[in-house]
Image 1 (cartoon, chains in turn yellow, blue):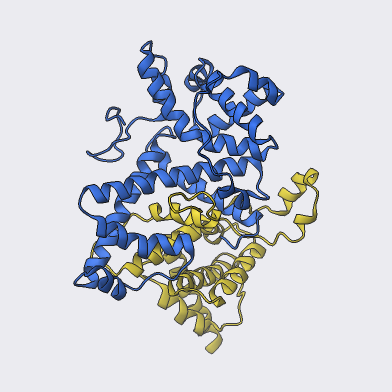
Image 2: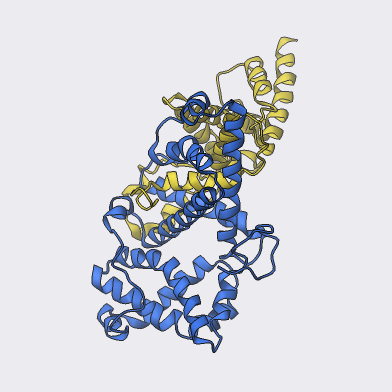
Length: 179
Length: 262
């Protein structure tokens, strides 16, 4: 990339630049990290699921349709997958694994916060829409984590709703186990 | 840059209130000078994605240049695209690519296109540094290259406009703070500079002022991008969707090229 042009920039970075425009609720005076996190989360949720392409990469181009069939989530955004009750559990698990990897990488606090939000969003999605716990975390621990994420100033509205539902579910399940 | 047109986009200071659909329709005018301005503007904005698309499709440098020239000369300057624009609905980006593919099909051989365009060409293609994209485009499908370059040109225009506006309004520091805190981390992958360091570097009294400075430029960025994108879509409502679609496509490209990207 030259100094005056974005040509040559990685597509991922170009997508992030576009993502700056999607966050419009900027209130003056708020800490900028909130804006950055919210903006990055929106960009991530608007992005598509990075599927493991190691298998399908080997397929010749002529099998385009098969490749398409093997990647049924190719055109859906992360946000759509985790908030849709009809999403496949396998896809949600994939998102959880992916977000976990993202969170464990040495990155900025903002990146990590966004990865953690997506990680818990996948867990919440499996709980709320499939009634399945896709993590070894206890309900009690999940309840605490969801509570921490709910109403974060940078949280998107759709994830916030999901976390509230999951939080209530964990409370219920946790109490059941105790009694 | 015109100030006419009916849209709520951009507020009172909007400089880009017409869409390219209406611009193309304006090209119907018998006023040759006006027509030429419209066409030149379209060419300036769109030759790069078209040229890069053709290169990725396998055309050599010269045939790709010839085809690019031919496309603008025969299709964009010709009346066909005006008629098609009247009939078409939807994104200008998709429309242009479809028109280009029809043109390639009709031409068949690149050397034929070479004979068709005027000797002096209709637009200078010499300034383009192909190396700047060759590594990034490696492995991309031609349509992906088109969209990638399209987004890149769009982003360059927006960033240049915001920077210029900031400087003209005496807000150079605003721009530099935005660049250091927001742009550089995205573009170069460096950690964002802390707000405390920004205060020190730019002599800003407190952190809240730094945050406000960044928000001000972000808003300008959002407005400039929305206005530019508005030119390519049919309604204000489609602006956000088009930005999201571009992001989705770029994310898919990154994924397909094994860049670590969501």
